[in-house]
Length: 246
Image 1 (cartoon, helix red, strand yellow):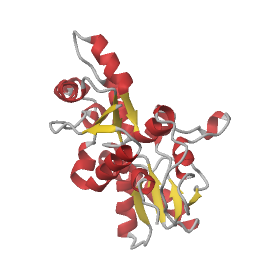
Image 2 (cartoon, helix red, strand yellow):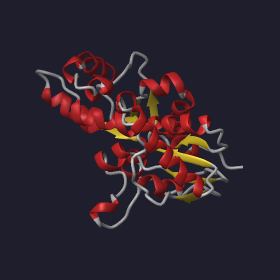
Image 3 (spheres, rainbow, N blue to C red):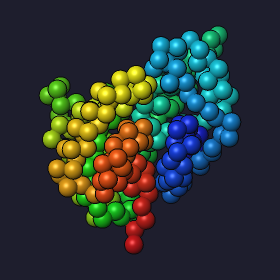
């Protein structure tokens, strides 16, 4: 199985340990992983700001880097969803459709493609799970409380395989953290208040760590935690799933 590793630009710049954990985890599970060195931004920030027509250069570069892989795996729900819904190759729609269908968010890939049922991982902490909006509502990584359908969660299923991990949810499990890409810039006061509400509910559960499938959400929450002087840490789910057993 030949996997192309798609690392969002903000992870590459600010959280390289998440990229390393994703690579190591996939290799431990038997994947042949390649990291195309010329990959850059997928174009999501432009699309979020209403300028998707200016992101064709990003699409072209993405295609040059990732065509030919069996699967493309990304440790970010929002970037994965952007490629799935917006990637274009004018004049080559068949190739565009194939690439869009080849992109998977990490936990989606682990559960749906690799069908992971066991992990040699240990993480002895009380962990709060933040449900990221793009992953839940766009990629359907977990059920939505308002739909009244049977509950499921791919991230929770994987975290349940980690020895010693105690998983807890906030009282309102699928409420947005307020990051929202460029929303946190244009509506910073609303964004910050939403993030503070999320932090408060996690801290009320006495968590040591907050995890999610999107490092962008965790980046937003981490900023609030640090400003508050909180001892609560954030960890991308890849870092936890890749934690070695003692």
